[in-house]
Figure 1 (cartoon, helix red, strand yellow):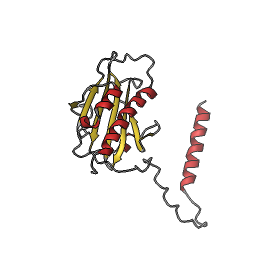
Figure 2 (cartoon, one colour):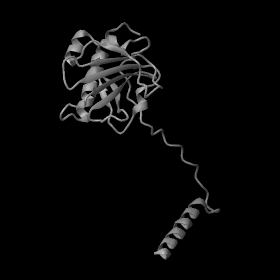
Figure 3 (cartoon, helix red, strand yellow):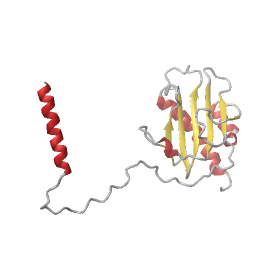
Figure 4 (cartoon, helix red, strand yellow):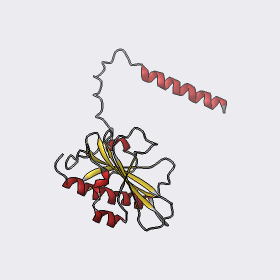
Length: 196
């Protein structure tokens, strides 16, 4: 077995060294141009919606809150687990429902949605690209966050959380669909504001 391993090592070394040398008599072609960036990117947004000065608590109307089954929003500090996020945040909780559900929104002023490009497919929220996020320590079946690409270097964060993790049969897809409902409602209100 040692002889086989030694032979394979010698063969690999010889192949690697031969790849590093080139014959002196053969002219070489110009090196190929570098490949185009293969970094994933987001599709164009339908319109730019700047979030500077936006209070996310004002982005849900009474009718939208009723449709989501939540009460009035409460200003909330941005997540202490992510001190890099700058922007106002709001929390809405279900009014008369058990198990409890919560929705949060953040007007992220210093990061675009591309920071969360992952293996999960992009979502389209009212024509805007959205990336999905998870929360460290949370069960992904009971939590989903979306970062909606609304402007360069800014994102509208919309999250759904099954606070008590008591929703029977909840899946990641359903949790993200709930976050998307919040994002769609807020975008509807945001688009109706005077042009920013």
